[in-house]
Image 1: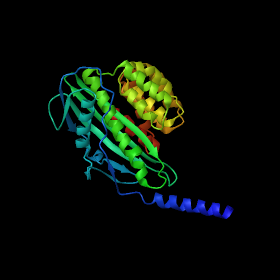
Image 2: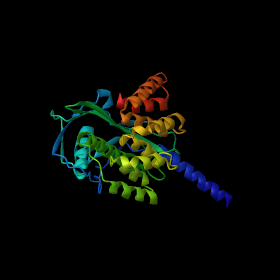
Image 3: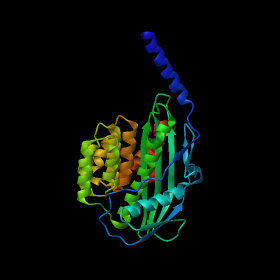
Image 4: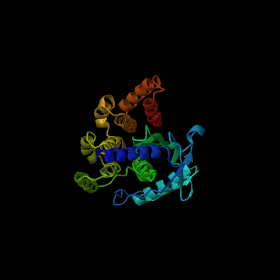
Length: 322
């Protein structure tokens, strides 16, 4: 009995070790499904948004990390700017804002894309395959420039095949990043927000809890409705890691300047790197004098410690806003 048990364990260990060494050279990702039942209750004129790819040369590699793999979509290499333009337009239109996103256009408003990439990491064959998704740019309007940043962290332990990581660590973060960017652009260009009824519906859904409740928490942030801030502050202390990260992130998306103290305490006292990094991302979103001063001080402190893996990852988040 014990011999069979240990034999099975040895076989599992061998299988995992083999799996760790056979990550694919490329992954096929999909286009995000636009949001449903989350229309902004805001009438807005037809808008053309120019998207200019201003990523520096060193930042144009879309997929990088400890397990290098190219990403394809529709059978061709993923073109970051083109992928963003078409899917950002689809999301804005689905949410009731008639918008045409023109790649390389010149008229205002313009989104100057400064970062869009996915970085993966895996410590060993028994640990999660993790992706860090960074999306940043400057929204240029006649009134000036506004910095926009998005950061999403996801992880999954592949048990039988690396195919298992595609949906949670590639497709979902890509979808979330584009939806968050769309919500931020909609707020800044049109003051767009969803109804209180949408907030109530999402809160009830989150209350029932399922495997993907974190996606509903993100959707709650994408309402741009300040009535979601109070419940979101409670969820920012949730025991479920991805619900908690979604809530911390969403306090930034919602512009919850009154929650700066909560966010700074999470950053100072959080036991997990991802909680601290997400709190710093949300502080960057707030774009208030106090938040900007805090971010500037932390940027300087982090630069002095550059070279540590987690510090370098955190710096990538901060640089979306500076």
